[in-house]
Length: 201
Ligand code: GAR
Image (cartoon, rainbow, N blue to C red; front, side):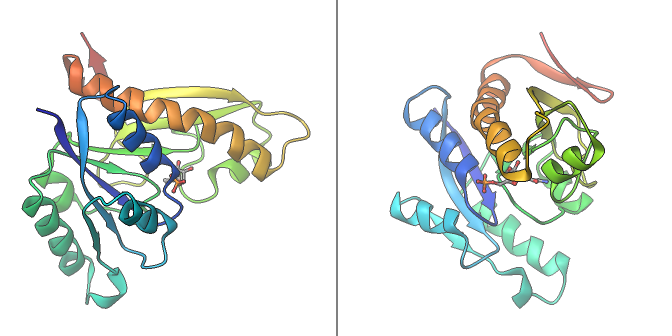
């Protein structure tokens, strides 16, 4: 049985499409059971609809507080019987209570080699810092921003003539490979979290 995966997104949705493509090609034993967006205009939501995947729009601005919003997201995940949650450009921090409902089953991708450059505009942060190498990180999600145990990372060079667009594009190529790789390994291999380490055995 393929694992039921929910995608949470707020924007373009290219990592969602990379994950979905790998599932469709049977490279990973999973299926997209639900796509949730908190942004009505998110291009990723439109892409999910055009693929005829189940989608739910939950605009957080309509909810009185984070708890009320997360309750709706959790209810949607439960209704779809989701086993894994992949954040793919989902620009909201999840609470500890939310994470506790899906322990070690929520993944995020971030466009830097964490713990360097968490938060917004990670590629610009790397350029401003003068980093010679950057990359992307897939990690298990905890309640802190871009923080949980690292599953996989990929590095790319930073060139002297890079700008945020060129560096983002180079990193994004790796994002689209490492996110399916990480989910596939978590689904097919034995692993456990030791301290902050995700250890495959
Ligand atoms: C990706 O670069 C992803 O790594 C980043 O948002 C972009 C979403 O693009 N996520 C973060 O910065 C999380 N802190 P996409 O919508 O095309 O996948």
